Image (cartoon, helix red, strand yellow):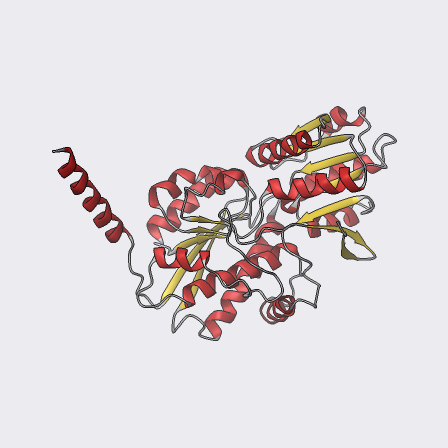
Length: 382
């Protein structure tokens, strides 16, 4: 009896999966996102939208997806998880999107996990290095960027092994994003038999840094990791550079800190970019030795001539190119399962100069370190 029940259950599951994997026959393929178009990190949303939509516009104009066009649906969540949840519900249940793409933030993405688990919808290239998106059991989660753990490990190796620095503090956002970075930093320090000498946190979507600053100042760290948003990071750095105990510290920001916006904020605050290391998950968007950089610059100039170039829009551009390529390689009926398979089998040379390899749910597995000198980002040799 149990054997018959097992066979029946297996058939039912296979049948359900077949029915669940809808065929998308419309001439328009809707791709949905929830990003901060307003609020304290609105530059994030602007960069993601312009970079991604530059390539989507190019794909539509040049018929790259076999007589089908991408409809990029964008909702503003102000970097607030509850708004992200509402937007995701609209995208899935009202707009019936084919896939979700380019969501920004760790706490925002974590809030929508229950929907993603229930609906099993493709969730590609979110802008977070969170560990919970890198569980290989979740077959519908595919990341473009490297993880926060990889970024922080690269920074620690450089700071400790090459620069011989070991007095390290952390300034972090008091939420899931900050916690992800904090835990990754603790784990990386353990591998070097090191511990934090000070730590301070602040509330998301605020500029309340005073308590955290006071917690870190007296420890006189050589290095301060910044696991926060660009406005708050910039305010902390400016204040630290004016403080006797912290003025010579090295400040390390990870990719979510938004290097371009930090530089701009510091300039607006009449501060400088000395002793700041910027970790990134993509190479320089100005490196014209890479053919894909030239393509990015040309398409941004065509579709968004008034937008400044930067790491985030470059990352969004690259991941949107991968998305379009994956759909264009689908043979026969377009389904979500075929799309996921095509993402995982993206040609290694698609990005012309940036090698890809699907590993542990992500296509990129390298991080880069930069300094900002003479009005440009210079890669640090590691």
